[in-house]
Length: 114
Length: 113
Image 1: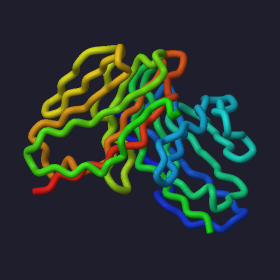
Image 2: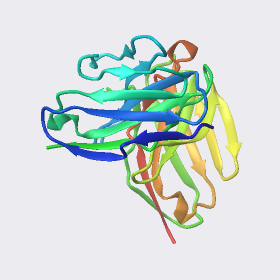
Image 3: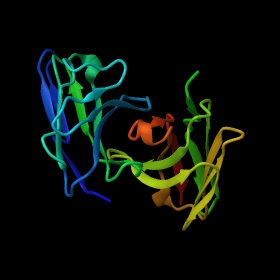
């Protein structure tokens, strides 16, 4: 399985600011995704990061709030824009090495918005 | 009603016990079923990955899928304190939805020495 590194591992941010989270994989992967894990809630898919094109967002998530980039097969970023306390959550990068292969997750970024 | 239901626990057992973790689901289109283990302040770690119905065994872990009952289970034999973690079930429709996993809420397990 791939080794997934996320930066930062945690951050405390002020309301109204933005934070960009980086996800680096040690090998090329077919698919990359961003999930959110809110306190006491199950993991929810935010979007699929598509290489060289716009990300595919799930219902309830929009590009203006969560812009995503994926410039190559090993790297992606998720930005949480104009943050509010409701954005306090764990954001997780996940990858599938091939189509239909299981997902592997990074250790997440723990975000607190004050 | 949630698509995937999982008892959040917590579940506390003595070391050496057999642990049974379960999830029920409502969508018959699910084809792929997974169990993840998540330690505190870590990301989910894939434990078991199965397609359609049946059993799969890996060491002390056995995953069962009963599609007719829309019910999946994870059994842990000879449980160890190191098994103390949150266990998440997850499922997906298939290739057209690769990556879109629907997760249960997670069951917190504590194995006491």
